[in-house]
Image (cartoon, rainbow, N blue to C red; front, side):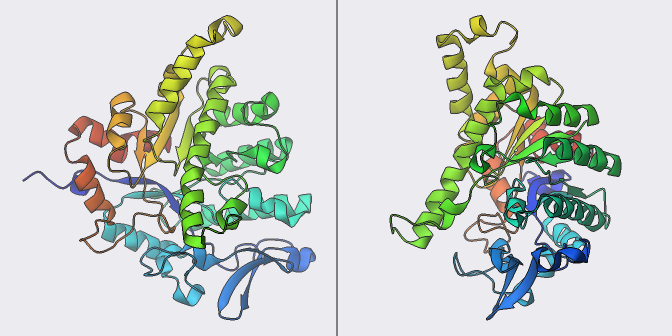
Length: 388
């Protein structure tokens, strides 16, 4: 019998989330801002994140792994949330149980592209909150900096401030930058606009990769059931459509010349899945030739598929049939994740339903060549995040 996949490698999970403790901002941001600082308040039986009296999130909604309910039946308060979701030592113990060597960490409160900080409305406080989160996350990961990998939040709405924060965080040891995948949702230039070039240049110079997490734009669609199809059906629809947003993100980056202008910059499509990638990249190659892009941009020396192969990565965690074609095309660009502890995550569950990450990997990847498996489960991520 072959050795189980999780026994063969130091598995690196490139997309997990931290359920931020209640004092992340109140303990680190100037008291002069009062209740405009993001804070937790218990309303009824639920813990809610507030800015002033405006709700901006609920920790229980981010913390669904192991919960028997489905959205909108979320855990109600921190009292109901397992410590592994907000405490670093408990997370490490959980990772040991699950045979996951290292976890890359993304936020919740600030949004999956930091856009939620814009709800604060005060630029100085917004920047202070971003810096406070980045300081907190580095402290949290210090419990084992070889296994807990922080991804910095970025004040993308202010390019000079974003450049300064990337430089600051690079000096603190960060290896990855979280960037908004849909800045146009916040009335800002599209990713293909050269407006963002100073950010790409700074990250490239610092040797930091850029992460584009799905859901980084306007998430109101998730709860805006304007067609009255039901919360659960709409949640499933909106969550699935969000994966497709990163197809547009990648098309913007390649066709807008970002990959060409910044050839050393690594770009990671996070929590997007990979099954759609063969179609999107093949379509880009087709349209590239069909529309004479090389004549319009003779400086572009590669096809979209070649730019992708050189610089772009993507992660998967639930697909049964879509993984293999992506691996055939891009064996060096595919990463493994669990999305712990989100509602869509691979998390410990009954063996009969196969939601356990190592059971899933064993079922879906058992016939993948050993040298490719090693890349998926460890080597590619280890290089991206400097873990070796």
